[in-house]
Image (cartoon, rainbow, N blue to C red; front, side, top):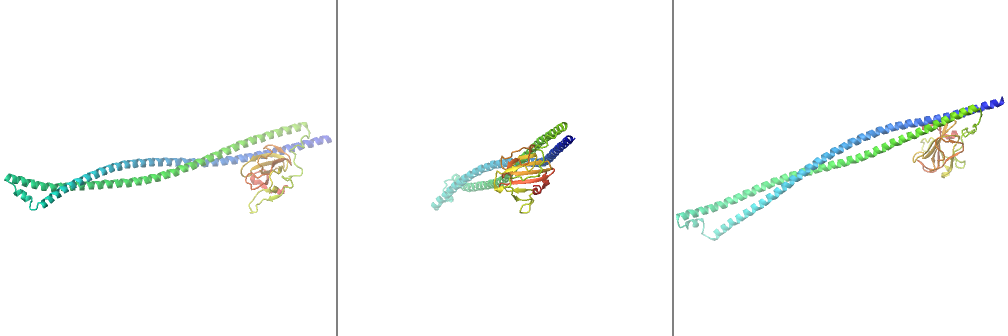
Length: 402
């Protein structure tokens, strides 16, 4: 009868331990699913941001194309103005040559007229009248009179004609120069607008590059979250496999009717949590609140500012997370214990994590070493205690459990 009672007690203990194990794993699975749900929320937010960035990028690219079209149009107009200005310059050069020739003709004719006037003056009494009176006959008289009259008229008309040509050429030249000035002003205006458009295009292109960078970062963020979800799926499957293994073990123990395995590594500690560091280094340097009054939600063990001190599991349990980050907690471990509590150990020494997710650990087992990874200003152990379901918001004062 006594032996039967012992067997029954043993079976009950096994059932209780298996149940606790299942509860811990189920709670861990719930935590992981909550984390996955949070990741999905972040993915949706990132996707929304990505869509907005893509829309902005598309609109900016469209604006760049419009600016390119405008710049091309202005450059075409500037080329046309250059052609017109070039033609006007040729006409001005031609007018200048014609004006110079007219001036030379006028000067030459004026010199001839002056020479005749000088000759007439030097001849003294000799005049047109003398030329006429010296005629030997009526015919000669008429001929000489006609020649003298024609000469004087021609001199006068030629000078008038040349003067009018000069004035016409000068007016035409002024009009050409005025047109050239207007074209030059128009060209300068279009060049100024084209320069402004090119500056705007450059700014838009820079915006496109900036948006492309944001798009790339958001895409990478989404990919990271998707990878994190895949990792969580793997962890959930592993924990579900642990549940199945625990069920089989529970079934086998019930069939055998023995208490075998009651003293396994899954047995809860009878003395509660131990300190996670050797006593010589287990000095609390920061409590639940920083000196500034800001909430800390954990305690820090200074470890005398020395790296490499061993970090122990404070009680039996199953490793939920063992990660190595470059920010935040740095190298950190989360353990689910059989009493429904969770403990977190952070800022471990690089490469010192000695356990992996899903692994069963015993109280006092070394899980990593003290370091200063992540958001840390010096070697120390960041230690948290969380109540079920072990989320960040469920942190409690660890000193109440040590």
